Image 1 (cartoon, rainbow, N blue to C red):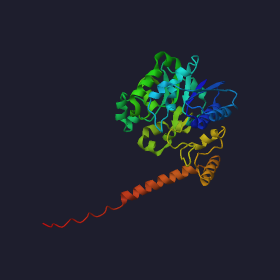
Image 2: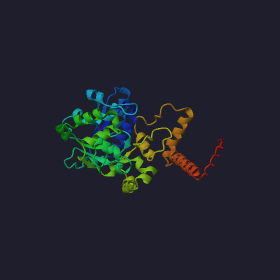
Image 3: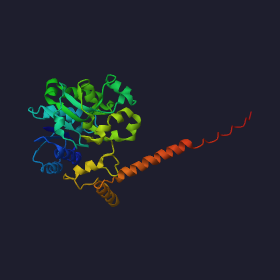
Image 4: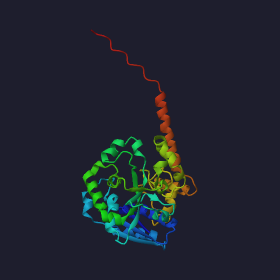
Length: 336
């Protein structure tokens, strides 16, 4: 089995966490972990190797990438070249590798990835799980502007099963790079938008449990996408992959995302098990450590504080709606 991660070296702690979660739960006899990065960071690489060395089934290959095509793409402080590295998989992985599972680094895999490895692509070059049904979420104009046909099922790019042989034969990587370079900052979800447009109508849909984003647990989805919320009930109860796709990443200070305990279960098995976010004060470090300790016994204080903040906002909004309107200002006297 071949599994691909793409990341800047600063994300290696989370990459290691995701990879460890795969290895802890996978029944496949051998897992070759491929990592593509633009960085040269010997310390981060050593930490990654240390994290995986306890798994006899694991093999790690790290490739440092310098590809001119990356220089043509839009990047900013939120989006780095690493987001596009998955497009290079057909070129940088050995030709004998015919298929690969790509995984984002901000996820964990409590399910058995061997089942995903056996996915029947039915002649398509890619399999991915559905994202939110944005056609019914107010973003129809954006999708149409991208060139997507009405009703096209927009997919999330965080979990992909890629037929590398087909990508090589059809030059799909070059097509993706051309589209991304031409579109630039106009793409909201850059690599993801490119995949949806270039491979429109040629993506096999994975079951939702293979990419349950923590957003699916939110009040926003329950309120805005009630049909989607109902459709994901079983997958949310038993996810095979949990994807922390919002800005509330579980490793952040005071993050209140769902499934934080699951993330730290696997983080504790890596070389970064004791690392805290940078820049915390002594009091904040103590709070962070206490929050993690309570997670181990099933208490998520961050979630409780997050719920309290939501209730406070709801209460303030309700009070504002019920407050009497101020009396109209008296009319100016007629001085004519």
